[in-house]
Length: 60
Image (cartoon, rainbow, N blue to C red):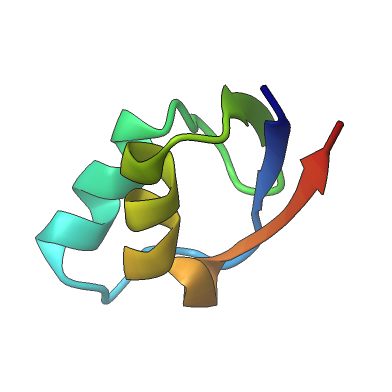
């Protein structure tokens, strides 16, 4: 299965609390951090909710 490389690019300061919770659920701790996840519908849904804060790409 493909992997997603997800990088947190924009701060959650002033954002709704649910967006901060999605950042934490994806495993981020600090800005400009990169995490890797399997390409699943659940992860894609989380990315869709906060795509304006992230940068992501698919790695084979």
